[in-house]
Image 1: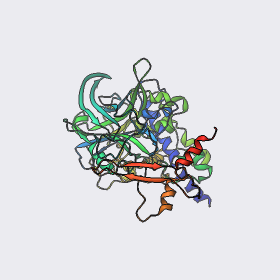
Image 2 (image 1 turned 60 degrees about the horizontal axis):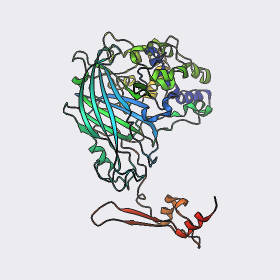
Image 3 (image 1 turned 90 degrees about the horizontal axis):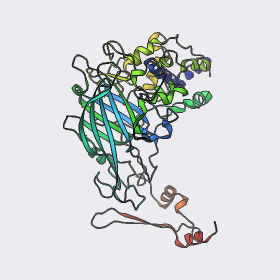
Image 4 (image 1 turned 180 degrees about the vertical axis):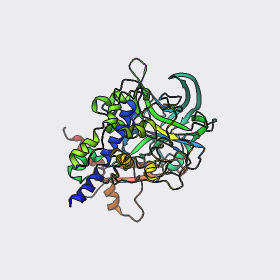
Amino acid sequence: MTSDSRSGAARRSVAALVCGALAAGGLAAAGVAALAPGEASASSHREAPLISGTPQYDNTDVYAFVSPDKPDTTTIVADWIPFEEPAGGPNFYTFAEDAQYDLHIDNDGDAQGDLVFRYTFKTHVKNKNTFLYNTGTVDSLDDPDLNVTQTYDVDLLKLRHQHVMSRTKLADDVPVAPSDVGKASMPDYAKLRHQAVHKTAAGASTFAGQADDPFFLDLRVFDLLYGGNLSEVGNDTLKGYNVNTIALQVPNHMITESMHQPVVGIWSTTQRKNAHGDWTQVSRLGNPLVNEVVNPQKDKDRFNASAPWDDARFLPNVTNPELPKLIEAIYKIKAPAEPRNDLVDVFLKGVEGLNQPPHVRPSEQLRLNTSIKPAMHPKRLGVLDGDNAGFPNGRRLTDDVIDASLQVVEGELVGAKNDLGDAVDKNDKEFEKAFPYVALPTEGSRGPLAKGTSGDADVRSQLGDALQPAGADGSPDTTLIAASAASGAAGVLLIGTGLAWWRRRMQRPY
Protein backbone atom coordinates (compact mmCIF):
# COMPACT_ATOMS: atom_id res chain seq x y z
CA MET A 1 0.00 0.00 0.00
CA THR A 2 1.40 3.40 -0.97
CA SER A 3 1.67 6.24 1.49
CA ASP A 4 -1.15 8.06 -0.33
CA SER A 5 -3.45 5.05 -0.19
CA ARG A 6 -2.61 4.48 3.47
CA SER A 7 -3.47 8.10 4.17
CA GLY A 8 -6.80 7.77 2.36
CA ALA A 9 -7.59 4.53 4.19
CA ALA A 10 -6.66 6.12 7.48
CA ARG A 11 -8.96 9.03 6.80
CA ARG A 12 -11.84 6.73 5.99
CA SER A 13 -11.23 4.45 8.95
CA VAL A 14 -11.09 7.20 11.52
CA ALA A 15 -14.43 8.58 10.46
CA ALA A 16 -16.15 7.33 13.56
CA LEU A 17 -13.47 8.83 15.75
CA VAL A 18 -13.68 12.17 14.07
CA CYS A 19 -17.43 12.07 14.25
CA GLY A 20 -17.06 11.55 17.96
CA ALA A 21 -14.73 14.47 18.14
CA LEU A 22 -17.21 16.57 16.29
CA ALA A 23 -19.98 15.62 18.62
CA ALA A 24 -17.71 16.21 21.53
CA GLY A 25 -16.83 19.63 20.35
CA GLY A 26 -20.45 20.51 19.99
CA LEU A 27 -21.25 19.19 23.39
CA ALA A 28 -18.46 20.89 25.22
CA ALA A 29 -19.12 24.16 23.55
CA ALA A 30 -22.65 23.93 24.70
CA GLY A 31 -21.48 23.66 28.24
CA VAL A 32 -21.17 19.98 28.94
CA ALA A 33 -18.09 19.98 31.13
CA ALA A 34 -19.51 19.64 34.61
CA LEU A 35 -22.46 17.29 34.60
CA ALA A 36 -24.25 17.65 37.89
CA PRO A 37 -27.38 15.58 38.48
CA GLY A 38 -30.21 17.23 36.62
CA GLU A 39 -30.79 16.75 32.90
CA ALA A 40 -28.79 15.47 29.94
CA SER A 41 -28.75 15.26 26.11
CA ALA A 42 -26.38 13.06 24.12
CA SER A 43 -26.90 10.26 21.60
CA SER A 44 -25.03 7.07 22.32
CA HIS A 45 -25.01 3.34 22.92
CA ARG A 46 -23.53 2.39 26.32
CA GLU A 47 -21.85 5.79 26.49
CA ALA A 48 -21.37 6.20 30.24
CA PRO A 49 -20.41 3.84 33.10
CA LEU A 50 -23.63 4.04 35.12
CA ILE A 51 -26.19 3.97 32.31
CA SER A 52 -24.49 1.07 30.52
CA GLY A 53 -25.57 -1.16 33.40
CA THR A 54 -29.26 -0.18 33.13
CA PRO A 55 -30.23 -0.48 29.46
CA GLN A 56 -33.98 0.08 30.02
CA TYR A 57 -33.16 3.71 30.83
CA ASP A 58 -30.41 4.18 28.23
CA ASN A 59 -31.47 6.51 25.41
CA THR A 60 -29.45 5.57 22.32
CA ASP A 61 -30.49 8.13 19.67
CA VAL A 62 -32.81 11.01 18.87
CA TYR A 63 -34.10 11.91 15.40
CA ALA A 64 -36.21 14.94 14.45
CA PHE A 65 -37.38 15.88 10.97
CA VAL A 66 -40.23 17.48 9.08
CA SER A 67 -42.43 14.53 8.11
CA PRO A 68 -41.79 13.70 4.42
CA ASP A 69 -45.41 12.73 3.73
CA LYS A 70 -46.95 15.36 6.05
CA PRO A 71 -44.79 18.52 5.85
CA ASP A 72 -47.05 20.42 8.24
CA THR A 73 -45.92 18.06 11.00
CA THR A 74 -42.67 17.19 12.75
CA THR A 75 -41.68 13.64 13.68
CA ILE A 76 -39.51 12.88 16.71
CA VAL A 77 -38.04 9.40 17.11
CA ALA A 78 -36.19 8.41 20.28
CA ASP A 79 -34.72 4.99 21.01
CA TRP A 80 -33.85 3.11 24.18
CA ILE A 81 -32.21 -0.23 25.15
CA PRO A 82 -29.14 -0.62 22.93
CA PHE A 83 -28.06 -3.92 21.33
CA GLU A 84 -31.30 -5.84 21.77
CA GLU A 85 -30.53 -9.40 20.70
CA PRO A 86 -33.71 -10.43 18.80
CA ALA A 87 -33.77 -13.96 20.26
CA GLY A 88 -33.16 -12.77 23.83
CA GLY A 89 -36.14 -14.47 25.46
CA PRO A 90 -38.03 -15.64 27.34
CA ASN A 91 -37.93 -12.23 29.05
CA PHE A 92 -38.05 -9.94 26.06
CA TYR A 93 -37.65 -6.17 25.99
CA THR A 94 -39.98 -3.87 27.91
CA PHE A 95 -39.95 -0.20 28.83
CA ALA A 96 -39.32 0.41 32.54
CA GLU A 97 -42.34 1.09 34.73
CA ASP A 98 -40.36 3.25 37.16
CA ALA A 99 -39.22 5.67 34.45
CA GLN A 100 -40.35 8.85 32.76
CA TYR A 101 -39.32 8.92 29.11
CA ASP A 102 -39.33 12.60 28.11
CA LEU A 103 -39.11 14.43 24.78
CA HIS A 104 -38.12 18.07 25.37
CA ILE A 105 -38.83 21.10 23.16
CA ASP A 106 -37.05 24.48 23.46
CA ASN A 107 -38.89 26.80 21.06
CA ASP A 108 -37.25 30.13 21.89
CA GLY A 109 -33.54 29.28 22.01
CA ASP A 110 -32.97 30.01 25.72
CA ALA A 111 -31.73 26.44 26.51
CA GLN A 112 -34.77 25.77 28.72
CA GLY A 113 -37.52 23.32 27.92
CA ASP A 114 -40.85 24.91 27.02
CA LEU A 115 -42.71 21.67 26.29
CA VAL A 116 -42.22 18.11 27.52
CA PHE A 117 -43.98 15.08 26.04
CA ARG A 118 -43.82 12.51 28.84
CA TYR A 119 -44.27 8.75 28.26
CA THR A 120 -44.93 6.42 31.20
CA PHE A 121 -45.50 2.66 30.92
CA LYS A 122 -47.36 -0.17 32.69
CA THR A 123 -46.75 -3.91 32.30
CA HIS A 124 -49.56 -6.49 32.29
CA VAL A 125 -49.16 -10.28 32.63
CA LYS A 126 -52.15 -12.53 31.91
CA ASN A 127 -50.72 -15.79 33.25
CA LYS A 128 -47.91 -15.64 35.81
CA ASN A 129 -47.72 -19.41 36.07
CA THR A 130 -45.88 -19.76 32.75
CA PHE A 131 -42.45 -18.59 31.66
CA LEU A 132 -43.74 -17.78 28.18
CA TYR A 133 -43.94 -14.30 26.65
CA ASN A 134 -46.68 -15.63 24.36
CA THR A 135 -48.59 -18.87 24.80
CA GLY A 136 -49.58 -19.31 21.16
CA THR A 137 -49.76 -17.52 17.82
CA VAL A 138 -50.35 -13.77 18.25
CA ASP A 139 -52.60 -12.17 15.65
CA SER A 140 -53.43 -8.85 17.35
CA LEU A 141 -52.32 -6.67 20.23
CA ASP A 142 -55.31 -7.84 22.29
CA ASP A 143 -54.74 -11.51 21.49
CA PRO A 144 -55.17 -13.62 24.66
CA ASP A 145 -52.04 -15.56 23.67
CA LEU A 146 -49.89 -12.43 24.08
CA ASN A 147 -49.10 -13.07 27.73
CA VAL A 148 -46.92 -10.04 28.52
CA THR A 149 -48.15 -6.67 27.28
CA GLN A 150 -47.50 -3.00 27.99
CA THR A 151 -49.57 0.17 27.75
CA TYR A 152 -48.54 3.79 28.12
CA ASP A 153 -49.80 7.30 28.77
CA VAL A 154 -48.60 10.51 27.09
CA ASP A 155 -48.75 13.80 28.98
CA LEU A 156 -47.92 17.24 27.59
CA LEU A 157 -46.25 19.50 30.13
CA LYS A 158 -45.95 23.23 29.45
CA LEU A 159 -43.13 24.91 31.36
CA ARG A 160 -41.93 28.39 32.18
CA HIS A 161 -38.49 28.92 33.66
CA GLN A 162 -38.27 25.14 34.18
CA HIS A 163 -41.47 25.02 36.27
CA VAL A 164 -44.54 23.09 35.14
CA MET A 165 -47.39 25.50 34.37
CA SER A 166 -49.92 23.01 32.97
CA ARG A 167 -50.34 19.30 32.24
CA THR A 168 -52.58 17.80 29.54
CA LYS A 169 -53.30 14.10 28.93
CA LEU A 170 -52.71 13.43 25.22
CA ALA A 171 -53.13 9.65 25.26
CA ASP A 172 -54.16 7.04 27.80
CA ASP A 173 -53.56 3.26 27.94
CA VAL A 174 -52.16 3.00 24.43
CA PRO A 175 -50.88 -0.51 23.59
CA VAL A 176 -47.17 -1.05 22.95
CA ALA A 177 -46.01 -3.13 19.97
CA PRO A 178 -44.40 -6.26 21.47
CA SER A 179 -40.94 -7.67 20.88
CA ASP A 180 -40.91 -9.70 17.66
CA VAL A 181 -40.51 -13.24 19.01
CA GLY A 182 -40.50 -14.84 15.55
CA LYS A 183 -42.57 -15.89 12.57
CA ALA A 184 -44.16 -18.87 14.35
CA SER A 185 -45.33 -16.67 17.24
CA MET A 186 -46.11 -13.49 15.26
CA PRO A 187 -46.61 -14.39 11.59
CA ASP A 188 -47.74 -10.86 10.64
CA TYR A 189 -45.70 -8.49 12.77
CA ALA A 190 -46.37 -5.58 10.39
CA LYS A 191 -50.04 -5.87 11.38
CA LEU A 192 -49.12 -5.56 15.06
CA ARG A 193 -46.99 -2.50 14.25
CA HIS A 194 -49.92 -0.88 12.44
CA GLN A 195 -52.24 -1.54 15.39
CA ALA A 196 -49.79 0.18 17.74
CA VAL A 197 -50.00 3.52 15.89
CA HIS A 198 -52.40 5.77 17.80
CA LYS A 199 -53.87 9.11 16.74
CA THR A 200 -54.69 11.62 19.47
CA ALA A 201 -57.52 14.13 19.63
CA ALA A 202 -54.94 16.91 19.41
CA GLY A 203 -53.93 15.85 15.89
CA ALA A 204 -50.76 14.03 16.91
CA SER A 205 -49.76 10.41 16.26
CA THR A 206 -47.80 8.26 18.68
CA PHE A 207 -46.09 4.87 18.62
CA ALA A 208 -44.11 2.82 21.12
CA GLY A 209 -42.61 -0.59 20.50
CA GLN A 210 -39.70 -2.55 19.14
CA ALA A 211 -37.95 -1.54 15.90
CA ASP A 212 -34.75 -2.18 14.02
CA ASP A 213 -31.97 0.07 15.34
CA PRO A 214 -31.88 2.85 12.70
CA PHE A 215 -28.36 4.02 13.57
CA PHE A 216 -25.77 2.75 11.11
CA LEU A 217 -22.03 2.96 11.72
CA ASP A 218 -18.90 0.93 12.37
CA LEU A 219 -18.34 0.97 16.14
CA ARG A 220 -15.14 -1.06 16.02
CA VAL A 221 -13.17 2.16 16.16
CA PHE A 222 -12.78 1.40 19.86
CA ASP A 223 -10.53 -1.55 19.03
CA LEU A 224 -7.44 0.67 18.74
CA LEU A 225 -8.78 2.59 15.74
CA TYR A 226 -10.22 -0.27 13.72
CA GLY A 227 -7.88 -3.02 14.81
CA GLY A 228 -4.75 -0.89 14.80
CA ASN A 229 -4.14 -1.65 11.12
CA LEU A 230 -7.44 -0.63 9.49
CA SER A 231 -8.50 -4.27 9.18
CA GLU A 232 -11.81 -3.57 10.96
CA VAL A 233 -13.76 -1.09 8.87
CA GLY A 234 -16.89 -0.89 6.76
CA ASN A 235 -19.29 -3.11 8.73
CA ASP A 236 -22.54 -1.88 10.25
CA THR A 237 -21.96 -2.92 13.86
CA LEU A 238 -25.65 -2.43 14.73
CA LYS A 239 -26.95 -4.65 11.94
CA GLY A 240 -29.41 -7.23 13.28
CA TYR A 241 -29.96 -5.49 16.62
CA ASN A 242 -33.23 -3.90 17.75
CA VAL A 243 -34.18 -1.05 20.05
CA ASN A 244 -37.32 0.10 21.86
CA THR A 245 -38.68 3.11 20.00
CA ILE A 246 -40.91 6.01 20.96
CA ALA A 247 -42.14 8.02 17.96
CA LEU A 248 -44.28 11.15 18.05
CA GLN A 249 -45.66 13.12 15.10
CA VAL A 250 -47.10 16.54 15.98
CA PRO A 251 -48.42 19.52 14.01
CA ASN A 252 -45.65 22.09 13.62
CA HIS A 253 -47.78 24.81 15.21
CA MET A 254 -48.03 22.67 18.34
CA ILE A 255 -44.31 22.90 19.13
CA THR A 256 -43.11 26.20 17.59
CA GLU A 257 -43.25 29.54 19.35
CA SER A 258 -44.79 31.24 16.32
CA MET A 259 -44.80 31.16 12.52
CA HIS A 260 -42.07 33.80 12.66
CA GLN A 261 -39.81 31.60 14.81
CA PRO A 262 -39.97 28.07 13.35
CA VAL A 263 -36.75 26.71 14.92
CA VAL A 264 -37.04 24.26 17.81
CA GLY A 265 -34.41 22.55 19.92
CA ILE A 266 -35.09 18.89 20.78
CA TRP A 267 -33.57 16.42 23.22
CA SER A 268 -34.70 13.44 25.26
CA THR A 269 -34.14 12.32 28.83
CA THR A 270 -34.93 9.39 31.08
CA GLN A 271 -35.84 9.94 34.71
CA ARG A 272 -35.89 7.11 37.22
CA LYS A 273 -37.24 6.87 40.75
CA ASN A 274 -34.49 6.68 43.35
CA ALA A 275 -34.57 4.92 46.72
CA HIS A 276 -36.38 7.89 48.27
CA GLY A 277 -39.12 7.90 45.64
CA ASP A 278 -37.82 11.02 43.93
CA TRP A 279 -37.25 11.33 40.19
CA THR A 280 -33.61 11.50 39.08
CA GLN A 281 -32.42 12.03 35.50
CA VAL A 282 -30.09 9.25 34.38
CA SER A 283 -29.87 9.67 30.59
CA ARG A 284 -29.87 12.54 28.13
CA LEU A 285 -29.52 12.71 24.36
CA GLY A 286 -29.60 15.32 21.61
CA ASN A 287 -26.91 15.26 18.92
CA PRO A 288 -25.39 11.85 18.19
CA LEU A 289 -22.26 10.49 19.90
CA VAL A 290 -21.68 13.49 22.16
CA ASN A 291 -21.37 11.72 25.48
CA GLU A 292 -20.00 8.57 23.90
CA VAL A 293 -16.88 10.02 22.32
CA VAL A 294 -16.64 13.68 23.32
CA ASN A 295 -16.82 13.68 27.09
CA PRO A 296 -13.98 12.18 29.12
CA GLN A 297 -14.71 9.49 31.70
CA LYS A 298 -14.96 12.00 34.54
CA ASP A 299 -17.82 13.87 32.84
CA LYS A 300 -19.94 11.11 31.33
CA ASP A 301 -22.28 10.33 34.22
CA ARG A 302 -22.56 13.99 35.17
CA PHE A 303 -23.52 14.90 31.62
CA ASN A 304 -26.29 12.30 31.60
CA ALA A 305 -27.73 14.03 34.66
CA SER A 306 -27.32 17.59 33.38
CA ALA A 307 -29.53 20.08 31.54
CA PRO A 308 -28.81 22.21 28.42
CA TRP A 309 -29.07 25.34 30.58
CA ASP A 310 -25.81 24.33 32.29
CA ASP A 311 -23.93 23.15 29.22
CA ALA A 312 -21.39 25.97 29.33
CA ARG A 313 -19.53 23.92 31.90
CA PHE A 314 -18.49 21.50 29.18
CA LEU A 315 -17.31 24.03 26.63
CA PRO A 316 -13.63 22.93 26.74
CA ASN A 317 -14.64 19.46 25.56
CA VAL A 318 -15.90 21.09 22.36
CA THR A 319 -13.50 23.94 21.77
CA ASN A 320 -10.50 21.73 22.53
CA PRO A 321 -11.67 18.24 21.51
CA GLU A 322 -9.54 15.19 22.18
CA LEU A 323 -10.24 13.16 19.04
CA PRO A 324 -8.57 15.32 16.38
CA LYS A 325 -5.38 15.19 18.44
CA LEU A 326 -5.53 11.40 18.66
CA ILE A 327 -6.12 11.14 14.93
CA GLU A 328 -3.18 13.41 14.20
CA ALA A 329 -0.90 11.39 16.48
CA ILE A 330 -1.83 8.05 14.93
CA TYR A 331 -2.66 8.85 11.30
CA LYS A 332 -0.74 12.11 10.80
CA ILE A 333 -3.87 14.01 9.72
CA LYS A 334 -3.31 17.51 11.04
CA ALA A 335 -5.84 18.63 13.61
CA PRO A 336 -7.60 21.97 12.94
CA ALA A 337 -6.47 24.96 14.97
CA GLU A 338 -8.11 25.59 18.34
CA PRO A 339 -10.32 26.90 19.81
CA ARG A 340 -12.90 25.16 17.62
CA ASN A 341 -15.46 27.94 17.40
CA ASP A 342 -16.76 26.36 14.19
CA LEU A 343 -18.02 23.43 16.23
CA VAL A 344 -19.66 25.74 18.73
CA ASP A 345 -21.54 27.58 15.99
CA VAL A 346 -22.82 24.45 14.28
CA PHE A 347 -23.60 22.16 17.20
CA LEU A 348 -24.37 24.48 20.09
CA LYS A 349 -26.05 27.41 18.40
CA GLY A 350 -27.33 26.11 15.09
CA VAL A 351 -26.24 27.29 11.63
CA GLU A 352 -26.94 30.99 11.16
CA GLY A 353 -29.65 31.54 8.57
CA LEU A 354 -30.66 27.88 8.72
CA ASN A 355 -31.54 26.56 12.18
CA GLN A 356 -30.19 29.12 14.64
CA PRO A 357 -32.91 30.76 16.74
CA PRO A 358 -32.60 34.47 17.59
CA HIS A 359 -30.86 35.32 20.88
CA VAL A 360 -29.73 31.72 21.16
CA ARG A 361 -28.03 30.49 24.31
CA PRO A 362 -25.43 27.86 23.28
CA SER A 363 -26.45 24.41 24.44
CA GLU A 364 -26.39 20.81 23.21
CA GLN A 365 -29.67 20.23 21.41
CA LEU A 366 -30.80 18.83 18.08
CA ARG A 367 -32.06 21.97 16.32
CA LEU A 368 -34.69 21.80 13.56
CA ASN A 369 -36.13 24.51 11.31
CA THR A 370 -39.70 23.27 10.85
CA SER A 371 -40.33 25.66 7.93
CA ILE A 372 -37.86 23.88 5.62
CA LYS A 373 -39.74 21.43 3.44
CA PRO A 374 -38.57 17.81 3.13
CA ALA A 375 -36.19 17.03 0.28
CA MET A 376 -37.59 15.01 -2.62
CA HIS A 377 -34.25 13.23 -2.90
CA PRO A 378 -32.54 13.31 0.52
CA LYS A 379 -28.74 13.31 0.53
CA ARG A 380 -27.06 11.31 3.25
CA LEU A 381 -24.61 14.11 4.16
CA GLY A 382 -27.41 16.63 4.60
CA VAL A 383 -26.35 20.26 4.82
CA LEU A 384 -22.74 19.45 3.86
CA ASP A 385 -24.06 18.27 0.48
CA GLY A 386 -26.50 21.14 -0.04
CA ASP A 387 -29.54 19.36 1.43
CA ASN A 388 -30.78 21.80 4.08
CA ALA A 389 -33.54 19.45 5.24
CA GLY A 390 -30.93 17.11 6.73
CA PHE A 391 -28.38 16.92 9.54
CA PRO A 392 -27.40 19.07 11.39
CA ASN A 393 -30.78 20.69 10.65
CA GLY A 394 -32.49 18.03 12.73
CA ARG A 395 -31.65 14.42 11.95
CA ARG A 396 -33.42 12.11 9.52
CA LEU A 397 -33.26 8.34 9.78
CA THR A 398 -31.23 8.20 6.56
CA ASP A 399 -28.68 10.89 7.48
CA ASP A 400 -25.11 9.61 7.69
CA VAL A 401 -24.22 11.49 10.85
CA ILE A 402 -20.92 9.67 11.27
CA ASP A 403 -19.49 10.84 7.95
CA ALA A 404 -20.95 14.36 8.25
CA SER A 405 -19.70 14.82 11.81
CA LEU A 406 -16.31 13.37 10.98
CA GLN A 407 -15.79 15.76 8.12
CA VAL A 408 -16.82 18.78 10.18
CA VAL A 409 -14.68 17.74 13.14
CA GLU A 410 -11.67 17.48 10.85
CA GLY A 411 -12.18 21.04 9.61
CA GLU A 412 -14.54 20.91 6.61
CA LEU A 413 -16.05 24.25 7.63
CA VAL A 414 -12.69 25.97 8.15
CA GLY A 415 -11.13 25.11 4.79
CA ALA A 416 -9.82 21.58 5.46
CA LYS A 417 -11.81 19.84 2.73
CA ASN A 418 -12.10 16.09 3.21
CA ASP A 419 -14.35 13.14 2.43
CA LEU A 420 -13.83 11.12 5.57
CA GLY A 421 -16.23 8.34 6.45
CA ASP A 422 -16.57 4.92 8.05
CA ALA A 423 -17.62 3.13 4.82
CA VAL A 424 -21.13 2.48 6.20
CA ASP A 425 -23.46 4.71 4.21
CA LYS A 426 -26.96 3.38 4.93
CA ASN A 427 -29.00 1.22 7.26
CA ASP A 428 -29.20 -2.52 6.64
CA LYS A 429 -33.01 -2.33 6.47
CA GLU A 430 -35.25 -0.03 4.45
CA PHE A 431 -37.20 2.53 6.45
CA GLU A 432 -40.98 2.80 6.20
CA LYS A 433 -42.63 5.49 4.04
CA ALA A 434 -45.15 6.53 6.69
CA PHE A 435 -45.21 7.09 10.43
CA PRO A 436 -43.46 5.77 12.51
CA TYR A 437 -40.95 5.38 9.63
CA VAL A 438 -38.55 3.08 11.52
CA ALA A 439 -37.89 -0.34 10.01
CA LEU A 440 -39.58 -3.45 11.40
CA PRO A 441 -37.48 -5.26 14.00
CA THR A 442 -35.42 -8.33 13.27
CA GLU A 443 -37.45 -11.28 14.53
CA GLY A 444 -36.10 -13.51 17.25
CA SER A 445 -36.67 -16.67 15.21
CA ARG A 446 -36.36 -16.89 11.45
CA GLY A 447 -39.43 -19.12 11.29
CA PRO A 448 -39.90 -21.69 8.51
CA LEU A 449 -37.07 -22.76 6.26
CA ALA A 450 -36.36 -20.44 3.39
CA LYS A 451 -38.14 -21.33 0.17
CA GLY A 452 -36.14 -23.81 -1.85
CA THR A 453 -34.69 -25.73 1.08
CA SER A 454 -36.09 -28.99 2.36
CA GLY A 455 -35.19 -32.27 3.97
CA ASP A 456 -34.64 -33.62 7.45
CA ALA A 457 -30.95 -32.76 7.31
CA ASP A 458 -31.79 -29.07 6.92
CA VAL A 459 -34.25 -29.21 9.81
CA ARG A 460 -31.76 -31.00 12.06
CA SER A 461 -29.11 -28.46 11.11
CA GLN A 462 -31.33 -25.61 12.26
CA LEU A 463 -32.44 -27.35 15.47
CA GLY A 464 -28.92 -28.26 16.53
CA ASP A 465 -27.57 -31.24 18.46
CA ALA A 466 -29.22 -30.21 21.71
CA LEU A 467 -32.59 -31.42 20.42
CA GLN A 468 -31.20 -34.59 18.86
CA PRO A 469 -30.13 -37.16 21.50
CA ALA A 470 -28.89 -40.22 19.64
CA GLY A 471 -30.92 -43.43 19.80
CA ALA A 472 -29.53 -46.93 20.09
CA ASP A 473 -28.93 -47.07 16.36
CA GLY A 474 -27.20 -43.70 16.34
CA SER A 475 -30.14 -41.91 14.66
CA PRO A 476 -32.02 -39.07 16.33
CA ASP A 477 -35.10 -40.17 18.29
CA THR A 478 -36.48 -36.68 18.76
CA THR A 479 -39.93 -36.30 17.27
CA LEU A 480 -41.62 -33.00 16.52
CA ILE A 481 -45.38 -33.15 16.45
CA ALA A 482 -47.41 -30.06 15.59
CA ALA A 483 -51.12 -30.15 16.36
CA SER A 484 -53.64 -27.48 15.48
CA ALA A 485 -57.16 -27.17 16.89
CA ALA A 486 -59.89 -27.39 14.25
CA SER A 487 -61.39 -24.17 15.58
CA GLY A 488 -58.35 -22.24 14.41
CA ALA A 489 -56.81 -21.89 17.86
CA ALA A 490 -53.04 -21.60 18.07
CA GLY A 491 -51.12 -24.78 17.27
CA VAL A 492 -49.45 -26.69 20.07
CA LEU A 493 -45.90 -27.89 19.54
CA LEU A 494 -45.07 -31.16 21.29
CA ILE A 495 -41.46 -32.23 21.47
CA GLY A 496 -40.74 -35.85 22.34
CA THR A 497 -37.10 -35.98 23.34
CA GLY A 498 -36.39 -39.65 23.72
CA LEU A 499 -37.77 -40.54 27.15
CA ALA A 500 -35.47 -43.50 27.64
CA TRP A 501 -32.45 -41.28 26.95
CA TRP A 502 -33.65 -38.69 29.45
CA ARG A 503 -34.33 -41.33 32.12
CA ARG A 504 -30.80 -42.64 31.78
CA ARG A 505 -29.51 -39.08 31.92
CA MET A 506 -31.43 -38.22 35.08
CA GLN A 507 -30.24 -41.39 36.86
CA ARG A 508 -26.60 -40.39 36.52
CA PRO A 509 -24.96 -38.82 39.62
CA TYR A 510 -24.04 -35.11 39.36
